[in-house]
Amino acid sequence: MTTSDAPLLAVHALTRRFGGLTAVDQVSLAVAPGTVHAIIGPNGAGKTTLLDLMTGFTKPDSGRVEFAGKDITGTRPHRLPAMGLARTFQSARLVHTLTVRENVMLGAYRFTRARFLSDGLRLPRTRREERASAGRADELLAFLELEQFADTPAADVPAGAQRLVEVARGLATGPDLLLLDEPAAGLDDTETADLAAALHAVRAGGISLVVIEHNMELVMTVSDRVTVLDAGKVIADGAPHEVQANPDVIAAYLGVKP
Ligand SMILES: Nc1ncnc2c1ncn2[C@@H]1O[C@H](COP(=O)(O)OP(=O)(O)O)[C@@H](O)[C@H]1O
Ligand SMILES: [Mg+2]
Image (cartoon, rainbow, N blue to C red):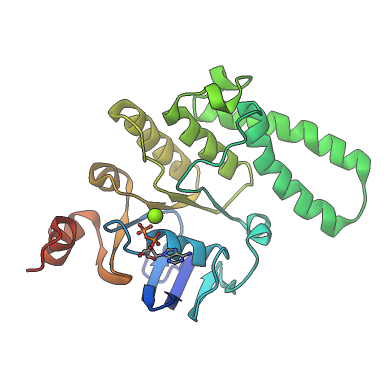
């Protein structure tokens, strides 16, 4: 990649306050196309708030978000999948009574519906699209090695597989960029390794990823670049090995100041 590549996602001096607390404080970062960009930091550092700001779930007090060269600051979250931006949540938001396949289809449905509304009422096409989205869901489930769970209610699937189903649902929207909030939360070592393999495969498929993560080993394994937040501010930004050796980062993780 060359330095002239325009970022896929860029945030400029984003700030978000909750009462007297500045949860995200003048944060700027750029996600290069075709990369995995990790955002790490201690609990309460502002990671989820930053992701909420990037995806329209929270409005900034100041600053700007650009995606694929467009200003998307304040764009409503439901509009973003159709623009190529999708996310997952820190606590899994699967519909437990629906099967895994149906959950993944919901991702595609949101995308279809956005187009459907803009295209006007075309019902036969909608039915065709529904069949297509079932096929697409099965492809994604195969891609993430989840086929065996396709007809299982989401509630009955192991925790690790549930996180991967969320990834599949995000992918079903056809994103250029997928943002994942702590995808490895609650996973054992084997499940985390499966997740890492899945993230590598997604990236190899040309989809960029922003991964908020606590698990340092996973961050080191999957990311091209790492931004470290502490108390709402960026304290380091660079290649994983650079960031890992940074004294401010070590101090933030150990909870002591140098
Ligand atoms: N809706 C909210 N109202 C008030 N405070 C919030 C809200 N969301 C987050 N915060 C606070 O903002 C800070 C950053 O939270 P968060 O972004 O969830 O951090 P992280 O994801 O890094 O653990 C925390 O102190 C948290 O308590
Ligand atoms: Mg969080």
